[in-house]
Image (cartoon, rainbow, N blue to C red; front, side):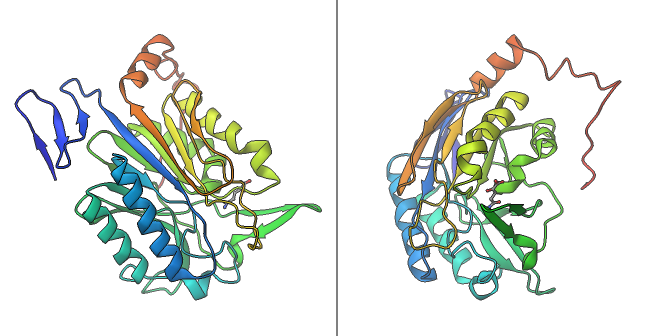
Length: 301
Ligand SMILES: NC(=O)CCC(=O)C(=O)O
């Protein structure tokens, strides 16, 4: 629950300051870089434990990593998939409500109740534990790098078709999943729609991680003058897919504000929205775009 106090400072019920009357809030983001193994129940319990820890450390917005309840492998997505009313959603809803936090539930293999299709989906919860958004990964991770890595999500997953924006009170947040970060148009649309931060639960690998993970985040941040956060699973030596880890938050100036290595950990960063206005007014590229020459359209509306 959110309540206003007389000095126009907005507090969450846990009394964390989230916004002043100039709409220039600071809130605390936590990215949970957790161990993901083959025991679904254990993965969910671990996520809940780490969400509690992030909340104890005053996080207002918490994100889990991509595929946090199941190994990242096309051969098991069906077996681990959950519907909207499944055990994973129930557990995340309880965690968001108990801790009174906004929660981006990483992603899970979601089985659509009607079509039976499976999506790589991020469910987003408000501090009352209600689902307020659902992002189905738009760009499926289908790559084949000779002698390095071949992965085809499309073998078992279907792609989503729309943007996902959630207004968390402090600002609007756009959500993408991993490979979605490689598509600058998506981030540009989120910026155009007023998002001040984009969160990408993701799991890059040992080939593309060192080469592109940070580069892509800093590019999306500088191009759009907003905050970017990525949240990876930690590295599991027993897994067939080795995650790069290195969950990170990048500022609208393109600086890495916080990052980590490949171990289980929680990254924290204060998200100061006033920095966005400052940077956007000193380098006003967003106003200087030549829409008479080029334009980007949201065709999902
Ligand atoms: N899970 C993913 O979408 C991985 C994306 C990735 O590794 C990349 O290089 O892109």
